[in-house]
Amino acid sequence: MQRQKPIGIFDSGVGGLSIVRAIKRTIPDENLIYFADTEFSPYGNKTKEIINQRSEDIINFLINQGCKMVVMACNTATVNSINSLRSKFSIPIVGVEPAIKPAALKSKTGIIGILATEQTLESEYFHFLKSKYSQQVKIETKACPKLVSLVENLNHDNEQAMQITEQYIHPLLSKGCDQIVLGCTHFSFLSILIKNVVGDKAAIIDTAVPVAMEVKKRLQSHNMDKNKRVIGTVEFWTSGDLANVIKSISQLWEQDIKVFKAKI
Ligand code: DGL
Image (tube, rainbow, N blue to C red; front, top):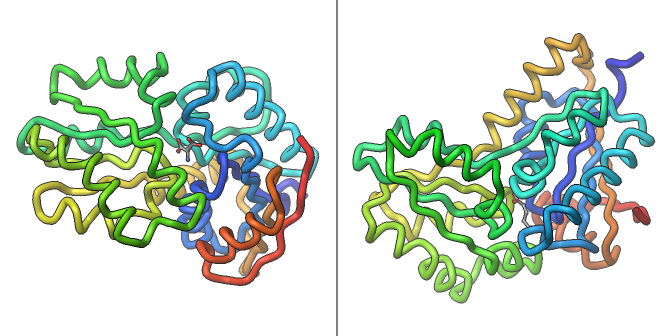
């Protein structure tokens, strides 16, 4: 019975769809419920207390929807809140954090660049991660608040988006970064544009696939995997304006979809 239950996934808005997409490809038979907290987007300029409270309320909502596991498809929420949330809830919680370790291992120049939200870069956990690898590599960071709103407003594929992306990335390249870490799930939707800006000067590191693999591993180790050769469903929920969210999810998911509204 437990195995048939859905996996709950959430982010401040549509960015976490990049994680949903990777999970869907990795374990297509699982049923998924995605919650876009658009009403409170962005998280990147919110306090740790607000992010904690939103994350806790959303996890309670997902548990009430019958979820067997929760994926925090948001670096900002993960680095600020995952430890305290894991001690509050008994279901497994998987998070996503900036991939400093793989970038440090791959770097040849010994300098890596992290693109993330302000609140991720300011968090205690990010400072801990940074100090863990700072003997190995030099870590340059760039807060990119404008990139989140470009994706939320579906303005991420035009000349203006290219210019804004350049402004964030050029300083990292000129410092010698040869690895650019996408430390925010929204940035996956800008990866082609980021690739165009970066060229062959650096590799781009995205965490969507490793997170999906971790979800698969955790389901198996908890004997929770659905284990049925039937394609799973994906259900979308939001706290935001329905018409806008339907438009943005449909475009990024590349399919016309239905979205339910939840007051959390
Ligand atoms: N997508 C999120 C992340 O991975 C949060 C972006 C935001 O709401 O500021 O950090």
